[in-house]
Structures are given as C-alpha cells and as structure tokens.
Amino acid sequence: MFLNEQLDKFKKQQEKCQATLTSIAAKSSKSSSSRAPPVAASPVTKAPAPAVKFSNDTERLQHINSIRKAPVGAQIKRVIDLLLETRQAFTPEQINEACYVDVKANKAVFDSLRNNPKVHYDGRRFSYKSKHDVKDKSELLVLIRKFPEGIAVIDLKDAYPTVMEDLQALKAAGQIWLLSNFDSQEDIAYPNDPRVPIKVDDDLKQLFREIELPRDMLDIEKDLAKTGMKPATNTAQRRAAAQVQGISTKAKPKKKKHEISKRTKLTNAHLPELFQNLNGS
Image (cartoon, rainbow, N blue to C red; front, side):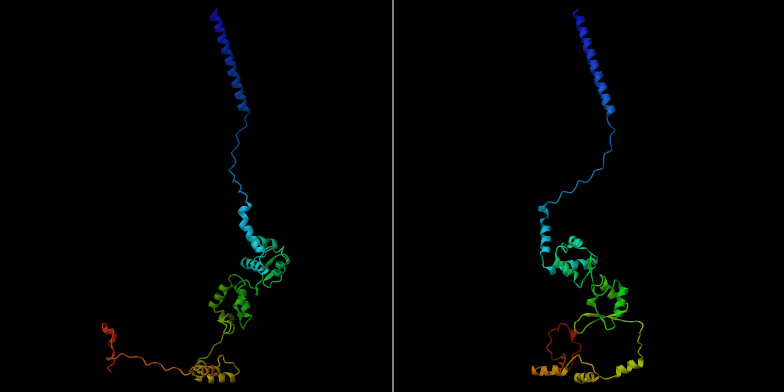
C-alpha cells in the first residue's frame, strides 16, 4: 500500500512538471510570434560639434572689439583693402562678417566710406572704384591711346588685378612705350600707334650724323635757348659754384700708364711669362 501511494505521488509530480513545460512552451511561441520584424540599422550619424564656449572665443571677441574701437581712418582702410582684394560688392552686413567693421552701426565710418573717391556706393552695396574703368588688356590699350602725351602707370595699377602684367605684354608686343619721368622717376605709358609709321631716309640719317655739336656745354645751352627749348643743365651756374668752392672745372690729366722696364724691381720673378714684353729702357 505504501508503494502505491508513492507511485501515485510520483505520477502527480510528473503530470505537474509536464503541465509546467507545456505552459512555458506556449508562452515562448506566443512571444516569438508577436515580436516585430528586425529594423535595418540606421547609418551612423556624425556627432554634433561641441558648442563654442565663451572662454574659447575670447581672443576672437577681443580682436573684433579692437577693430571697432580703432580710428575711423583705420576702419575705412580695412574695408577698402577688402573691396580692392575681392573686387566684389558688399552690403554693410557682409562687410561686418568679412572684416568685422560695423558700417551700419557707425555713422562716421558709413559717411566716410560712402564719400571716399575709391569707393562706389549704389545705395545698398559698396564696391571698389578705380581711377580708370578698364577690365582687360584690350580696354587698357584703348585707354592709353587716348593719352598721346602719356598716362602715369600709378593711375593704372588698381584698374584690375593683372593690369601690370598686361602693361608688360603690351610693351613686349610693341604697342606701347613705358618710359620713366625725368622729374618724378615714375613710369609713364605712351601709345605706339601702328597707324602712323615713320620711315626715315638714309640720306637724312647720314645728314643727322654729320652734324657736329659744339664741344662746350655753354654753346649747346645757348643754341637750345635760341630755338625756344629750355636746357636741362645750367653749366654757367655750375661752374660759378665750383669756383666759389675752390673746385677746378678743368678735366684732370690722365695718369701716365706705368710701364715695366728692366730696371723695375720685380717681385714676381718666379712667373717669367708675365715679363716677356719688357721695355729696353
């Protein structure tokens, strides 16, 4: 009887375990069927840059503050340099972003910039204004030909960025002359118009070469004055000043060339080839 009770107890435990396993299996299948399908992984996004702290931006803010507290002339130069380098038109807001000059908030800077001869203002934007409005080499040549008496190169330097290279190219092509001014030592551009070629006869060239000029500069200056030309020199004044200062105007006689003779003491006797043409004296 005791064995029967033990067997019944064992069967009940087996049934209980079986029921438990069935319940777990049912819950597992239910959860797997209700699970959503896997979602494709999203691409890795770049982490946003950390915000700039005030402590890290102090140097830039100090630089901006020093520019805005600078004299009006210094701020104007900063803006003009920006317009010259870029050759673009800027609004006041764009100028502030590019070079930190607050044109809109500073009336003195705004008025000075608007009235500056190097700046063009159309009511909204500022741009650089050169003395001569030319954009390329062909326009440059047309401009120079309008000035047969010559045009200063300094007035052409800011026309456009490559104007100096174009001047040299026109000179190399024989279309212009670049000569230095005697007084200011500045280069002057002259047109070399190919429409008026000048041909000089050989007889005229020979006649010109046969003309004998006076040997004294005083006579040359007198002849120039007779023809209405002003001499570039004043020999009479120069000679008078030299006499007052005790300076002789006569040309110094040339030193006689020292010749080596047999009586000359030779210090390079070990080089006999240097003394093959000794004078017999």
